[in-house]
Length: 215
Image (cartoon, rainbow, N blue to C red):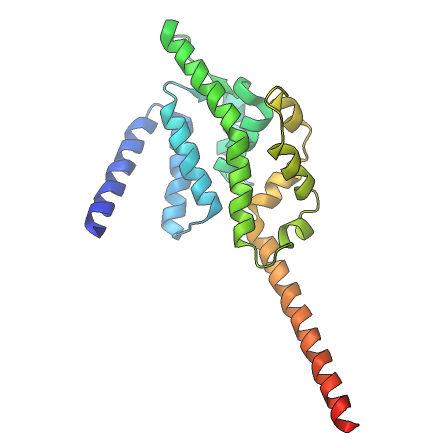
């Protein structure tokens, strides 16, 4: 079974490399995937990368404008997958470019698939946040470390279909996306705070027990 899964993984990697040759965005996401594999990292960011690769593979011919590509795939900051998801939410279908050579029914189908992905991007973000919350060392860790998150999550979750998603997201503080990407830092703060709280509680219980023993 392990040999089969390894072979399947290699075939998928080769397939992605072949598709990415003429598609810079796929190549960009593939490079991030490669870094995850090299570091043997898994978790919400890796899963997000895999989901976005799957989404982009399904939409033939599609690319993004050069300015957005440079913002998403170059420079420092949070991951390319996270940047792509954020840009998809903020810019909607306007982020993507269908080449002029794609015409007729083929073009209509491609545009329709882009629209479907943009609509799904809201649910992709909710899933990403839920995955992070499931790993939280304490129930309220994320809400304490990212105070804006609770209202942000609720607003997105109950966003009505007839509301312009792009309008909602364009005014959102970009800091939230960066903080979500850096969730391990928030978790470490919570672990330290929880350890301190438990140590203080233990010290109080010990002091109380000693006081009662002296009576």
